[in-house]
Image (cartoon, rainbow, N blue to C red; front, side):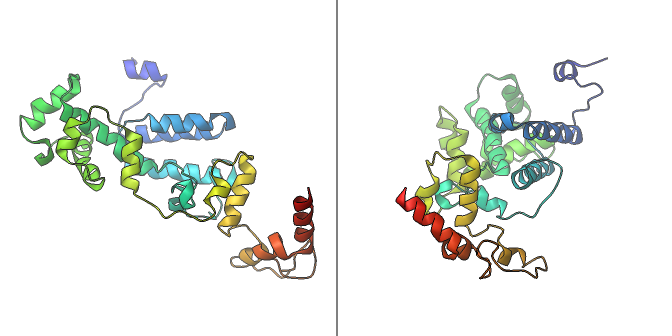
Length: 266
């Protein structure tokens, strides 16, 4: 006999514990990544999610996204050219502004705590106040005997403290903006001098990504490949005279100089 949740999801024999949620969420992310047209749908799914995701689930989601970024698929693996933490930084700071799922989910959980503080007329909020707060200060409550999810909701106060938001501020918020608070907990980053080359650039995404790697000096030139592979031939295949590195390939090679001259005369 299917439950209502199983009927809605179309999944039989589904047990809603951490493990089943983990595999369901991960499978959904893989399905979205496997279809190029669905990339925006992945972001919408994660941004709209206010579910408490276990840390293991977040790690698996990020691993799947890393694999897709560097290989174009969701099954094979490849050495990352730039650290994931750097990619999650804003574009002006030298990142790609990729969503930090761990931080975003913490901020999304904070919305649940905000609902508790605002004492809205939701049934589950009334239940929290009846069984856990019992008229006490929400910031002082540590429900050790509560379920894992309820404990995560109350621990969201640590996220508010990190963002410099007090209990009184949370209680008086008329609107909870996940995007705004996500920006607060990320803090400020130093701006890169070359940020204008990438920001608001209307070129193709593939070209911009190659430019992004070049600005970070992470293109797979022979001098970099030789760091983890035994290369006997280090000569540039275009000019056949000097060793290949990023400066030579982009500016010093005769072929590169010819390309630049034609572009400047165009």
